[in-house]
Image (cartoon, rainbow, N blue to C red; front, top):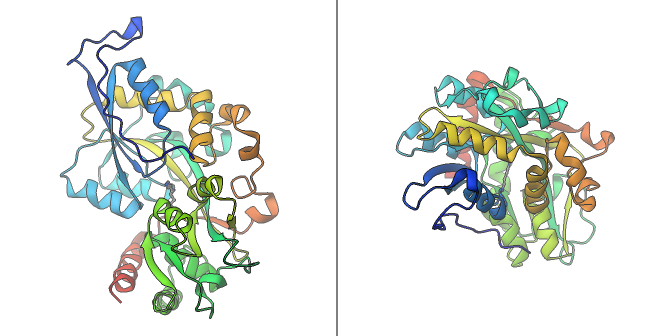
Length: 349
Ligand code: SPD
């Protein structure tokens, strides 16, 4: 598999495009804060070459850790890639600045289902980047015919070695789904039941820990765990490396998340950030990214360039009957504090 750990600070002596000739030393730097293993390094190199820029990347594994770092104020980035439900929180926290549509003509490439979403009417601040469901990945050579259910994690089985995402809304959401509730529940009782279930699950002998999607993929590949909760794209990257790594969407339902490019309020380089968004929304570039990361693309114009195997992958583009069990994570208003408290309790026990 292509190596996914990468660094993009390669210094180019002179930018090659005649229209963008930039002498060494005059390069602009674009700082991108993004989920790990979520970008094709070759695309970054092409952007650097075309715009005579350096792209510096820093990564995170959950929306909440991304938000905490930005709210802390220490770090300055031009762009981030938050999921749908956290965007309005970022707007209210004054962390975002508007996308100037005239600078991003490729916004037109976004498929209509992903344009002007409820979480950002009119695409005032965001442009859909990639999306996926959250699945269960397992080693078929270790776990034979697993129930296609969250019960493989939350049920009574105690021998399977497993890991959970280090992502509060994903873990609490999966527990809520297993219990038959909405993953956006704001009911104190339902959330308490979800918390107790996660605490009980954590106490199982087979529980190895919480990790990011790429961490869980790597543990599965290394044979350190038999099964794990995982963002589908990270799981599919692993399946490319080992055919025994398989994925399923739990029958009780799961999350589906759209991640978005946003320009940050204190972006040192707003113009370049918008050029980057426009570059990423190009049809061929969008397809290259998805072909590399194995995530689904909301870029309608990119679909024709996707690898056929990816286009027909049901974990990424599920048939309507499966998709019915999917739920978008939503912003839960004042219940956010309850989710935060539960996550702290779960982590502490
Ligand atoms: N390694 C890339 C992870 C992208 C995950 N998408 C966010 C889902 C949050 N609910």
